[in-house]
Length: 261
Image 1 (cartoon, rainbow, N blue to C red):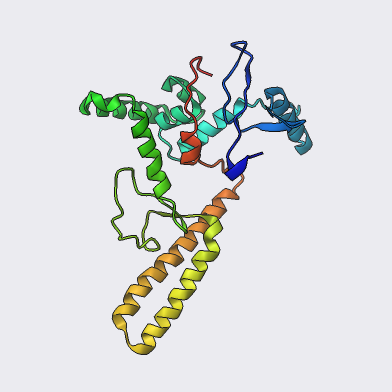
Image 2: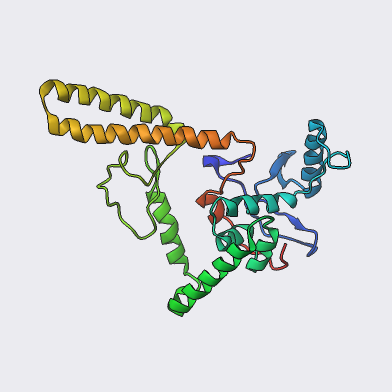
């Protein structure tokens, strides 16, 4: 349950390993108990998961009902994320691991040769780049980084341009290949496509051939983005799709596990 403006309320949780209460955090799994916000316990999550698995009737090789632990899904997520192109060191940050070897231990099927090639690449890059680039960022620098992504929000979705770069397409977003269209804006995109068709028809009637050419480029770009939305939806409906975390989900994780959990 979210609070005002869709924000996740901060709640305190008890660390069973440290035997201490953690500071309030925006924990994803929480519920309302008699008007009091509380985190959902791992036992509750585990029981709900096993109940859902039991209802499916799925069994293991020995014919016993399948049983998963919440921790198993960290392995599934990391494996799927890396296989879909997420760099291992980014997966390390998202998972909250202090050591990338822990992250790679979670990755079930990523080829060892590819892992070693990536590690060698990171080592070479760090040797070539100035050491000051690996210092801890200041609060002001981090806020500037976050503000960059706020400025990328558009009517049709979000701009995928890199941090520190300006728009090179003069804000012709429909034509821009780095525009990431929000699926909820499909209707708006249809309206833009239909409007462009009407303008092309008008330009053809009036003999504005230069206008026809420019409008046709925009119309084709709108058609392409609609096709991309269809392809993304098709992937999401795939039984093996696990998804990739958004930037806001990754940026929200600021603490790192020190015990390799």
